[in-house]
Image (cartoon, rainbow, N blue to C red; front, top):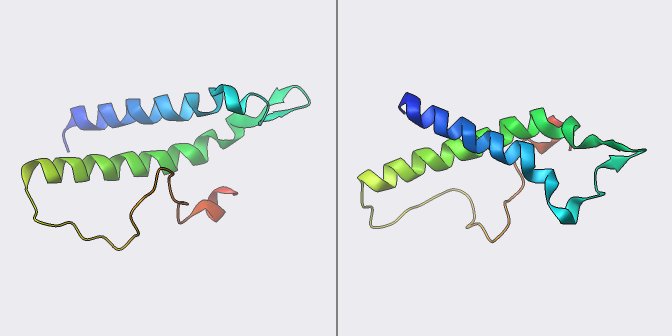
Length: 93
């Protein structure tokens, strides 16, 4: 990866991590006694999102340079939702 890739990845990660809880449907989900607890999840979420974005970035670059006839993975195909991260227990979930 180039330095520009790393910079772009960090920007995407920062955008996701700093805005995910601002969705109107989550308005009161993280409020407790007038405090927004969403910040408590930022660091662990940063690590998870960074790993996911980096993996997607590498796969995208790989598939742009090669034209495989098939793509095999050891995980099920994703639906519209993101599957649980394997180490969610490690980040307090």
